[in-house]
Image 1 (spheres, helix red, strand yellow):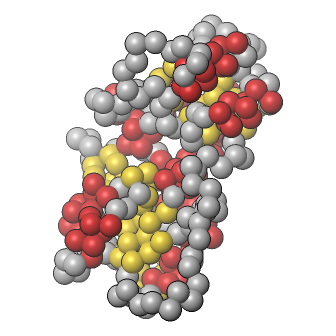
Image 2 (image 1 turned 90 degrees about the horizontal axis):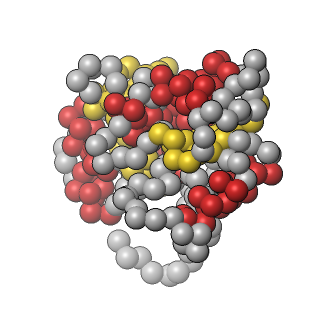
Image 3 (image 1 turned 30 degrees about the vertical axis):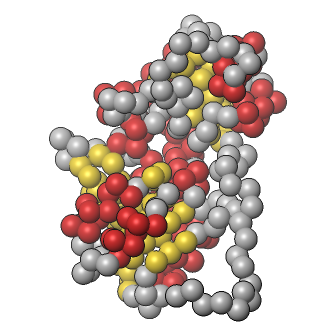
Length: 278
């Protein structure tokens, strides 16, 4: 049986309904002919030069990415611009692109479920529920047994792919951690929601100095674990690949990208500066 791009899109949009996407988002098929056959698919976080390279090297006909390529409105895609150049490379190479962004964040299961599973947490409920009470951004979860915060941070670092920036954490190393909130991607916009949830720790990405500092100063504030944006969403790739395998995998090879597309390439921890700035 011939499988088409449209078949893959149908499977993905059933799992990640476009109606769940935020109004500002850009999800769905970016380029490619829905009627074209597909035999190989690459799933990745970022549609960038290296993942397009990887897809073409694997002779894929479709990239499934989490982040949109053309999030903001454009009036053209000339080949001499970075994103326009990618579009032209994909079209010339017979490579379609499909993006599932905030609809994959909010879906059940979605991006944060994949993050929680990677950390071996049991999901209890959405962190910020949608109108149906089941979907929504982030997840509330729990550990099988309480463990010290330092051990929990080590759990996070061991579970996610390595990045130059590594894993940062803020909190008492001995604090017992049992209940956890997770939100794949940039999550400091949910710090007040996390505080109200009363969890012991919050795992997310892209935490900023002032919001984190102000959060930690509040009574009962959860400890914070800050990971790389790309690393927090990479577990979703296997989730999306599993959806495709279950729907069309008997006739299509599904690959998860092995290329790190986190933009940071160097991380340095100063040693022996001789100064205490505390």
